[in-house]
Amino acid sequence: MPADTYENQIFENYFLWCNLNSYGDIDCQKLLANSALFRWWMVQYTELEMQFIEDSVEYHGYCDKHLMRKFYTETVIKISQYYCKPLMELARNHQPITPQFN
Image (cartoon, rainbow, N blue to C red; front, side, top):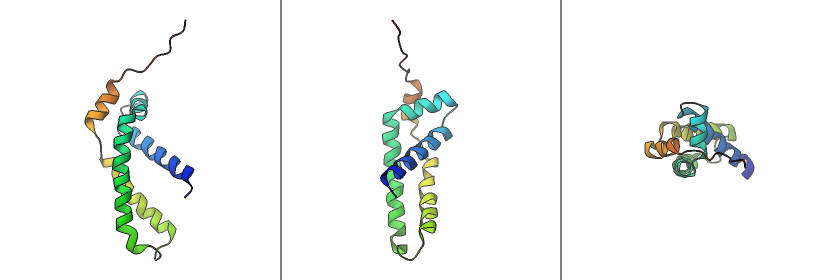
């Protein structure tokens, strides 16, 4: 998978996770914009990817890419069950910067 496709997939999965854990559009935007929350999420996501690699290494070469993709999705979808309440509350309480016009 090309790097830009992988990056887009990561962002799409993070967006879906934020949307799942938000109370609306503005709340979702606050979660999306919080870099600490994203770093936490990325660590959790990376651990799930490592789990996928460990679990699938014995099938390498025996399964087609569509089956491996399905297995990957089934593994990383577990991220939907994870959340970090302190970081989410911090993101929600953060006041956005409003533009000031002179």
